[in-house]
Image 1: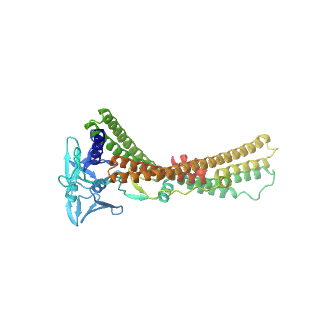
Image 2: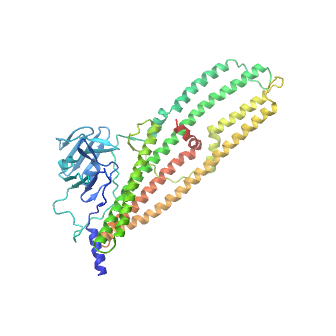
Image 3: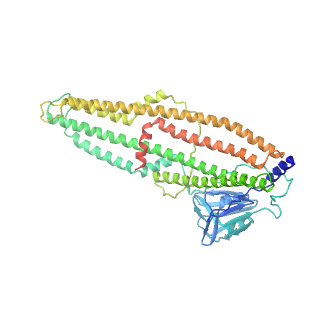
Length: 510
């Protein structure tokens, strides 16, 4: 009897359509397609008494192929011999070039195209039902009698399930990292202020230089010495202003890199959260089947239900974090907070081979911060060289000497900070590379296990849940690896210009 019970459970699981049996939160609209509860980054909405659903998620689940033309803002969907076209903002669609009047205009919310629910049945011939009481949309394109009964036995072969990310987004446009940097620099008030300051400092320098006839080698006439020291200070201000503008742009470059890569990571988080919900739904269904066949208690169902609720909350948090990541980058590049776009540049892994000692040397000779500190030392030494002992009220000579020492200590401190930053960044990159290698090694095993699970499923030795979980482990590891590559990409820029990382917080606030 025990063997029969296990066999019965396996058969029931294989022939069941996994659905979320937990009620939607008040106000939410739930979409069930062919028995499977869907998860979308933008939930369906009701607008002017018309229910609007995410086009890509629904159409692809019904077997259609969907393409998006960002320039024309046009969607094209095709299935078998039918081709559908829709333009954003229009109440007119086309099926095989014939016009179809929509109940409401198509629109974009959170990067997804929403279409009237009735259009699904009009265009693809699917059976659509709207339950106002439970706020549930049920869609099916299965022929009558083909849906699987969860309490029946069947010998029909099933296709091994795969993990499918339900995070689908239409974008108004796309954005490369290089373009993002250009936009951020063009929008930065710090850059604009720096450019004006350079012009201002240049004019002051030109005027100050009119009174300088020669460079004094030692203290002489007080008036001439004072004028030259003023000119030297003005010249330093001018050069420092140019250097500071360059450093501001480098800080913006780093800040954009950091925000751009973090946005990629938040997108991955949403994808994984959606997959984890589907995993929880499958486990809940298994628990319910076991309970209904007296193979477990209500406790297991309760635990599975709680896990599903937690995963749904995790998805909502991931969506909010993604929105925040978009807002943060939009603020820097001058976009509106609600604007969404496709990120075109995804970092590719390559082994980091830079020599840390060589880089320390390069940084110490190319850093703007160090250059500025060294110039202050030169200025302090000039004041000491031109010190006039006969001028009453002058700062004591010993105090001027201490100014030189203070400038030298400041320079040494700046060098140490940058050297420490380079070494720390290098170690962080190497630590991430080690994690990446571990994930890649684990991926080999995970892919092998997923392949084995599929083969076992094909001969009836594994359940859908086992196959799905094996695929989920692969997908999770792949996206973890992508996140690590994004972090390494950001640190590589910081490694080359550590002062940019230190100044990015101030630059982003402008």
